[in-house]
Image (cartoon, rainbow, N blue to C red; front, side, top):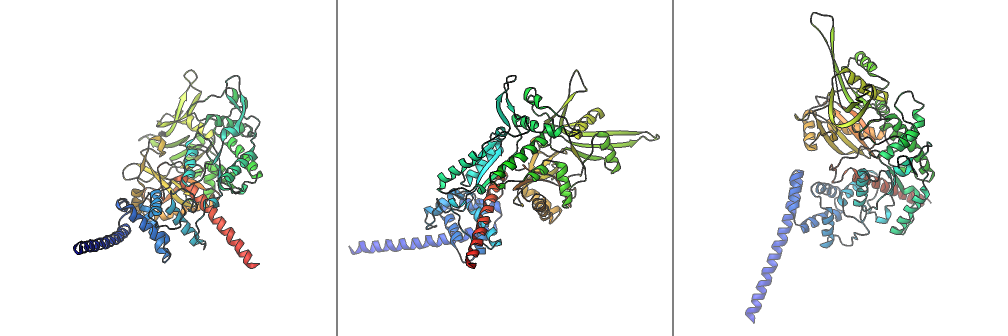
Length: 597
């Protein structure tokens, strides 16, 4: 018996020693993890962090989240970990599983909802914002986030789908979608072509907006048991493109406006409902489409404001400016934003050549004022050479564009212009003159052609920068062997990290200047827009940068992430943060008033 007791005690001692050794190993391993994460580059840190046991990860996160001794150190560690770990959902489950977050109810007390995605990333953002605004950090319950989204867009379009997915990833219900078709449809079937007629009285279709708002309130009450205020509804206005029915409706709304203008092709309301047929890629009635779009927005904003809605993703004036390149260029010049020289009132090919010669330019870009996706963009250049021993000169010219000129076989004087996916080069004066005259007649801007910088031997490049809340959130490098860099034309993406290293090598400090420019555009030119797509280029020596274009709906950049969030998730996060800060400030002001009383 004594021997058995001694053996048991020996086994217990060995177990205790083994346990203490394991604890020491765990502690040393945890410290090693911290050191590795601090020292290694992002990609290596991510690979290392993936190898760490989930329990150790949870232990690390619990220390960071619950520690109150050094807030700055905690914030820095969370920020570092957010760069190297993407498994937020599993990490929070592990935190609960291993009892590291005691008293933490995941279903009621999260930062942004009852989903785990983006927890720590948003924690960092809230920290930074609240420190700047001297506000106390508080976890917002699900019921506290009252924002609900009303989406105006094409429901079948992937833009709406991406935004709905972003809402879901933050634990918010899908937004209520009112389609452009609903706004532009009469609901009457045309007996001649069996199509539904679009509105033809210069008014958008009557919709029971109060019923839609009441429906959103009922859903909110069913989910939370609380009342939803009309002022908490955010209206997101999305692009009306890529839908032929919507195109017909906007053309109809633009009939009255285009009839008051001298230039621009036009189509009557009767022809829109009875004759106009779908023709994939055809560039037609551009100015009339724009006037109809602005007409629809004016009525839409007036109606929604009349129902008490005050929050919009942008304003009428700012959407109008981003859809008119001439207006946008003028606004940027007014605020001192670097842009290429532009000329607004050029009406035809001959005038354009005269303007070029008088301003010592031999290369320009001709851009449709209301075009998108490189539609109606022409890179034009000419050279005048004098023949040796003669007073005569030879005039050579080249137009590079994605616009395809298609003539009628029987009547060559009649032609159509299509926006294609292939770059074309026109050298005949007859072709060049026709396509340029067409674009200028629809309303266009003529910009000086500034040579773009080269991207490591892969051709020239520019950037599409997504600015959300006045800050650069996502950007993509677009490289091309042609003057146009749009990705849908078959051009290639560049690596963002490689670009930043190249820029720092060529022109140290240039990225900070780019940030200042983009922030100025968002805060001074378009202060009410939640999101902007800024096209930016660098000069050949990288010492200067220029804004090529500002897009109101420039957020469609799949597979580009910032803080592990895509462009649509970034917008949702920014909207939620604005709401939380607004609520915090409101409560602080109310508390101050109570103290005064």
